[in-house]
Amino acid sequence: MKKQTVLYFSVGLLAVGLLLVGLSFYRPVRITIDGETSTVQTWRLSVGGVLKETGIEIGKSDLVLPSFNTWLGWNADILIRRSRPVQIWIPNKDLLLSFSTIERIPANLLSVAEIQLFPGDKISWNGEEISPDQNMPLQNGYVLEYQPAVAIHLVENGRSTTYYSSANNIGSSLWDEGVQLTQADNLSLPMNSSIETDINISLQRSRPILIQTGAGEIQSRSAAGTVGQALADAGVALEGMDYSVPAEEQALSEDGNIQVVRVREELVLEENIIAYTSNQIADPNTDLGQSSVVIAGQTGLEVTRVRVRYENDAEVSRQVESDWVARQSVDELIGYGTKIVPLTLDTPYGTLEYYRAVTVYATSYSPCRSGVDKCYYGTASGLPVKEGVIGVTRAWYNLFAGQRVYIPGYGIAVIGDIGGGVPGQYWIDLAFTDDTYQPWHQNVTLYFLTPAPANVPSILP
Image 1 (tube, rainbow, N blue to C red):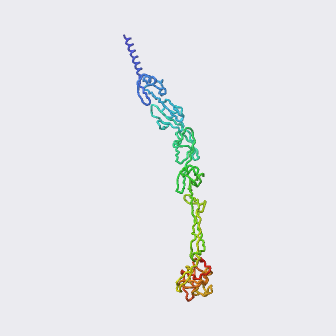
Image 2: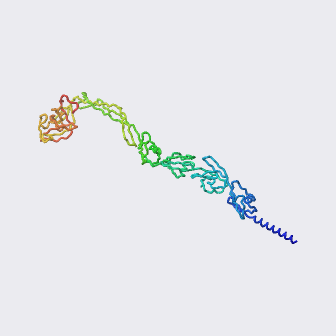
Image 3: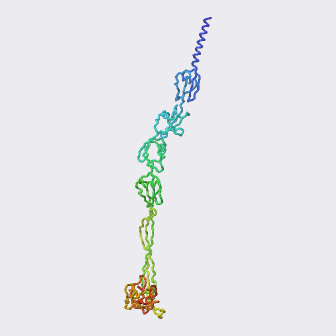
């Protein structure tokens, strides 16, 4: 009986020991999957056993820490990072790479895809450029766009630089590089030119230009090398005979100043009057001293065609191209009367007969009032200087010496002396003695009394 009791007691102790040993293997395990942690109680001793017991499936690209065969201690931790599908689109190669990975950093994703990242490369996610080192938030999957940078060789005003860009076009690459352009800058390629491989571009910076025209000043900018190109950039056209200083084909000056000269020409018809001459003929049918127009004079007309050049609306030259007579002049022909017709005049001396009356300017003189510092008492005809003798010009004296005349207010006289006359007028000088002298300075009518001498001129000289 005693032996049997000991046996039961020993078996009981063994059972309790085994129970205690079993209880020591039943422990908690914390499982963290993509940042979410849960705790399970398990008898399993390895990571693989725990995952199998809990029904957690592990994908080929998932990360499990510790590894499947690792034995777990008390209060152990299992870390699981699920892989996500990743697609990388490379536009310039029209290539789409697809794979799964636990990585969420763009640079690491490219490394998984065996893409080497260089400075200037561009990575975009959901349409936004992201940093290669940015840890992307947890998503079910990722679609990235990768644009590898290309070398852009830029020559700016003769200075060469190279930069790398993953921009879609030249304009965007320059903007990213901090190269700002003005509208007048001259770029060798259009701004929207796509970039697929290394590219060479040149940039000529514009500079201020001042264009002076007849209408004012135009301020602009141009990257042109010649004056003509600079004017075109400013929208200033040279038309016709217009020219610029410097000339169109010359290089733009350092100060950027250009003078534009607007040129126009006009054809002008100038009219010049051709004067006619006046000729005289004797007319026996017209009274002496009278005249008549036999042929009326008419002026002619000469036309000259002149080319007038204007520069900025200022006349600079005139050039005669041709001239012609549009109308011939017609000479005037005047008939002077030679017909002597005696006329009568009532005077204090009775009725006098005359054949010509002429308006003259009358002056007077006496022996000691002849305009010199000496007294002259005789005349050219030998008559003494006294009332009844008048002096005339040499031309008249040669024609009418001894001719009887009548002067109202003076009386009847003869032409018997010679004087200097008054230029531009018919003139007579009335003789007086020194005692009877009267000053005359007036116009009077001189009547030539009959009989008329032979060869009386129709026109008085």
